[in-house]
Amino acid sequence: MHTILAIESSCDETSASVVSDGKIRSNIIATQDIHKQYGGVVPELASRAHEKNIVPVVQQALEKANITKQQLDAVAFTQGPGLLGALLIGNCFAKGMAMALNIPLIGVNHMEAHINAHFIAENKPEFPFLCLTVSGGHTQIVLVTDFGKFEILGETIDDAVGEAFDKTAKLLNLPYPGGPLIDKMAKNGNSKAFIFSIPEVPDFNFSFSGIKTSILYFIQKNTVQNPDFISENLADICASVQFTLVEILMRKLKKAAKQFHIKTIAIAGGVAANSELRKRIIEESEKNDWKYFIPDFEYCTDNAAMIAISAYYKYNNKDFVWLDAVPNARMAIGT
Ligand code: KG4
Ligand code: ZN
Image (tube, rainbow, N blue to C red; front, top):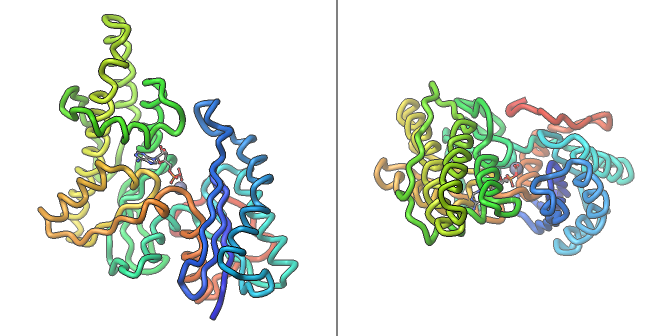
C-alpha cells in the first residue's frame, strides 16, 4: 500500500488530503473568508491566509486519515495554474515535508486535477471522454484519451464562465463568490424573463466578456427607469443570466460531442456545482444517449482530494519532481 499527502493552495482555499492506493481517506478544506469584504480574491491576503492555515489543515487531514507523517510515501502539491504567491506556500510546505521525510515530491496541474476528480468515485468514465472544465479562471472543453493525456479542443478567448457569474453577482450587489448565490436566487426565477444574446465564437471556443457588458448596460438602463429594478427582479435576472451562461456552454459541448463522436461526457471545476448546468447535462444525456459524469459537490470546487487522486496516478508512473520544482502561475494543461 502507498499513501500520499496532497496540498492545494492555488487560490483562496487551503486544502489537504490523504490518499491510500487510490482511496481518498481525508479531504480538509479551509475557505478564506477574508476576501468577501473586498468583492474578490486579494492575492497577497490569500498567501498570508494559506501560511496561517496550512499547518492545521495538514494536521487535520493526517488525523482524519489516521496516518502519521512517517507512514507517507510521497507529498504532492498544486504546481499551477493559480496565484503565484498562493502556489508558493503549498510548494514550499510540500518541499519541506518531502525533504524532512526523505520521500518523493509530486507536482500536479490544478486543471488536470479538476478533471481527474472523476477518478475518485467507484464509477469512473471510460476513455475517451469529453470534459467541460469550468471554474473561476478557466472554461475549456478537453478531450481526455487516457490518464494524464489531455487535448484542449476549445477554451475561452477572454473571461471564464465562473468570472461571468461572479461579476454579474457583483453588479447585483451580491457578495463574492457570487456564482453559488446566483444559482440559489435563480431557483425562484423565470429564466425566460430577460433575453441576453449568445455570442458567435468560432470552433469550440467561448467568450463571456460581451455578455458581461450587456448585463451591465441592461442593469444600468433599467435602474435609471426604476431604482428598485434589481431588488424587484433579482430572481428573474439571476435565472435569465444563468440560463444564458449555461446555454453558451451546452451549445459548444454538444457541438464537440457530435463532431468527435464522443458519448461519454463529464463536467468539472467550481461551476460544475451549478444546478442548471447539472440539470442540462442530464437532459442532454437522455436526448443524445450520452453517459454523463458529474462530480460530487465536494470535488467540484477547489479541494486537495483531486490533487491526491492525480498524485496517485503519477506515483504509479514514478512521475516525480525534484526539490527545485517551482510553481507556475500559468501552467498549461498536458505539460
Ligand atoms: O474551481 P473553483 O473552486 O476555483 C477555481 O479554480 O477557479 O471555481 C470557483 C468558481 C467561482 O467563480 C464560483 O462562483 C463558481 O466556481 N461556482 C459556481 C457555483 N459554485 C461555485 N458558479 C455557479 N453556480 C454554482 N453553484
Ligand atoms: Zn479550481
